[in-house]
Image 1 (cartoon, rainbow, N blue to C red):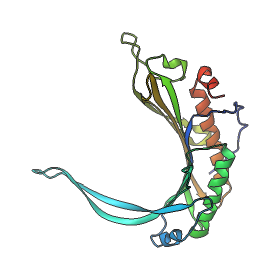
Image 2: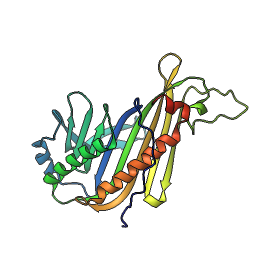
Image 3: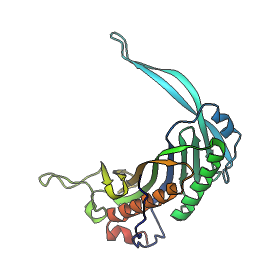
Image 4: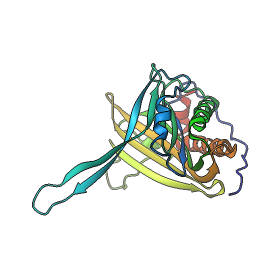
Length: 252
C-alpha cells in the first residue's frame, strides 16, 4: 500500500459560529479482539472521561412463519466494549473489540485538538490490546444549518434539492445522499443533506460529511495519522464547497 503524501491544505476562513454538531475519528480493526479482552477495558480509565458504561453485541434471528406474524428473537448477547462520557456531554469515547471512536459533540475548536485526543485514546487502547491491524479509517463532521422554509435553497447550498420546472418551486423536506470517490487518496466521501421543519419559518438542515479510507496498516504506524489528516482535509473541502458565500458569511 503506497504512502499518503499530504497536499497543501486550502486556505479557508476560521468560523466564529461554526454549525458543527459532531466531529469524530473512527479507527476499525482488521480482526475483532477476543471476548476476554473486554475484562481489561472494564478496568481501564481514559483521560478526561468521568463516567462509563458497558457495551454489548447481540445476535438476532428474524422469522417469517407462514401463518403467524413475523417475529424477531435474540440468540446471543456478548460484552463488546465500553462507552466513556464527559460529565458536560462534550465528548464520547467508544472502545470496543473492533476499534475506537472518539466524538466531540460540543465546544469543538479545531482538528489538532480532535486528532490529539483520538491519538491519546488510541495509544491507551493499544496498551490493552497489544499489536493490532487496522482495516478502515474515517473522519465525520455533522453540521446543523438553519434554513428559511420555502426559500430558494440555491442561495445557501451549492448542491441543494432540485424540483422539475413544471412543479411548485417549494421544498419543505428533502434527503439527498451521494458517494464521491477520491481516487488519488483511495478514499470515499458519503455526503448526506437533509431538511426537516424546525422553529417557525425555519428548516433544520443537516450536512453530514463522512470520509473513509480502507487501509491495511499496523496499529502503531504513523501512517494512520497521515491518512486521517488527509481525510480531514477532504472533509473540509467538501464543507466549504457545499455552502454558498451568503451562508458562509453568517458563520464568520
